[in-house]
Length: 221
Image (cartoon, rainbow, N blue to C red):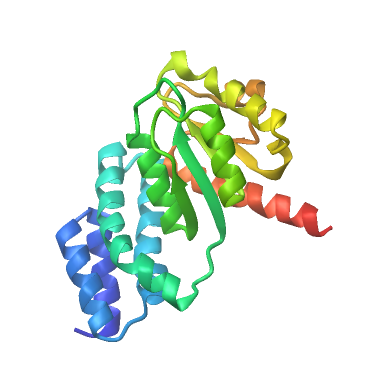
């Protein structure tokens, strides 16, 4: 198998969510001497971007997105330590968690995979994350972005509680706050004072990159 054939195969298998084949081709690529960055940036990320584009067009739905995301997550498990060794640049750091009172994490996990696939470092705090835990994680990891996820309408007010906790601890201006989840809307995100909202995992990555670019441009102005 040539380099190009392997990358094309890896792209196709990621797109269709064939986890075992993605793992096999990732390992095969590494044994052929391909670098982890090549596999990531020339096959895996383009495949996940195509998944996002198909989702936006209505050709793919959440199950297809999840399956492709899981397939890619398997490859990332192998590539992550190798990328760290090569000193591959991450484009930013994200602290992510499902808010206190909420145990839903499928959407959050999919967003995490999409973020990682796009080159972000993700620190996942899990579910039922209290405001003080977000504050601690921001102090420790100094992320560019913090993401709050809520699946239940009853837990959405925690967005406001979390943002208030960041304000109280003097951290609010140091991070971009993004919110999301099934019942969340742009209007609600605006009301609670979030910087960004996205309706799905693919849009979340696009929005995060926009917000980060704008913030860095303002910082260097």
